[in-house]
Each structure stands twice: as C-alpha cells, then as structure tokens.
Image (cartoon, rainbow, N blue to C red; front, side, top):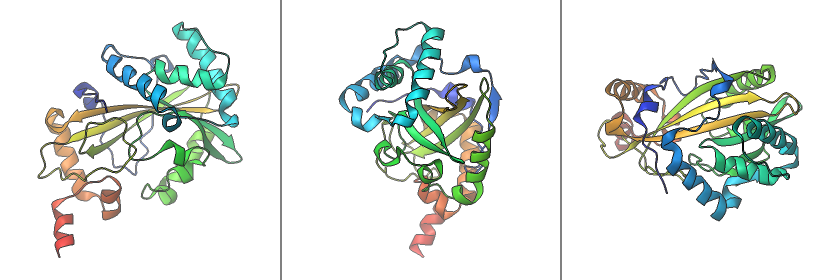
Length: 263
C-alpha cells in the first residue's frame, strides 16, 4: 500500500555497514519538515491511522508527557491547532508529518518504546514492540546486543535537549509497499532486477522537560534502477561482505549464499 520514489534522498545516504551507528549532528531547525513531494505519503498515513489505528498508534502512560511536550513545540513552530488529550495529539502529529514518530522514555538505565505513530514498519509490528526496552525492540538485529546496545544507551543518556542527531539505514526489498509489517521475499541484488532500495533517515531529539527522546524515521522506497550507480556498486560489494545472519535479517540472497544452500 503506497510508495515513495525519491532518488534524490538516496544520494544523501551514507552506505555504512549495518552494525555501524554512524550518528551525525544536524540543525534542529531542519527536523520534521515536510517536503513538496510528501502529499501522497501524508494521505497514506491518514488512511492508515484512520482505518488501522491499532496497528500504527501506541501510547503508554509513560509517553504522555513527552507527546504533549512535543505537540506544544511543533504546534507553536508550525502553526496548527493542538488537541488536549495526548492520544489525540499523537494522532495529529502522525498525520501532520511524513516521518514516523517514536517516543522513547527513560526507565532506570534503559529507554523504553512507550509511544509511537508508526505507519511504515520494516517487517515488524508496533503491537509486538510497544512497552519494551530498546534492547528487546532490537532483539532480531544481528550484533545489536553485543556491539550496538551499549553504544546506543550511552548516546541516548548523553543526548542533550536542543540538539538533533541523524543516521541513515538501508535495505533491499522486493516490494514498494511502505506499510510493511510482514516478511517479504528475499532479494538477490546480483541477479534480480525488479526490486527496491528502502532507506530510513532517522533522527534523535531529547525534550527538555519530560526527558523523552523523540526518534523519527523518514522512509523512502526507490526502484533499484533509479538508485545512483555508485550506490548500487557500494551495495553490491557490501552485501557480499555481510555474514549469513545479516543476510537473513535483511532478506538478501547472494550468489555465494545460494551456493552454500545448494552445497
């Protein structure tokens, strides 16, 4: 359901190994800004929130203060009316911006996914993840517990209000569907032709009063033929270097992996 083809956003992508955090500072003023080409995405988000609210909206009590604080900030900045109830604020924000919005709240020395307007999951379900610590949310991600979890927790704990940090994530998928909660057929970038590059431009902002971290995700799906040639080459090389666990997680088949199965 729905697709976004924006080759220009692929050109901004840093194609790092998926086990690399790759966080970079950026201007807060650029955060959560819609683009002229976002109209179809916003329409799709409104449709999903209206008809599949249980699948794409989650709000625990721990996130209510953060949702309200975020709503006050964005309504003042962008000039739209703000509902009173946190649940309706989250609904409004979920339809107002092209990005998915996740609310991470501190719980001891961890952060918990306590709320979200998440319309474009990549092979996971919000109903399965809401209320869980970040480590549990990322349980299926290879090397996360061993290599990334402590780095992410340190970063979130040290993050200061008024700062915005971004990172990029990439993957290959066999469908242009943006709302993608279920597994999809694997892709072999060396032999297949009709598939897509799915990128996520992710941002992190900590709110000053509630202490919640707002994690936003702008998802773009681009036909492989429209991906810049240099990026295609980088991806082909990188997929050959990924181990079997990463290939399985990313639903990627390589020629070498096919040979391993046949052998």
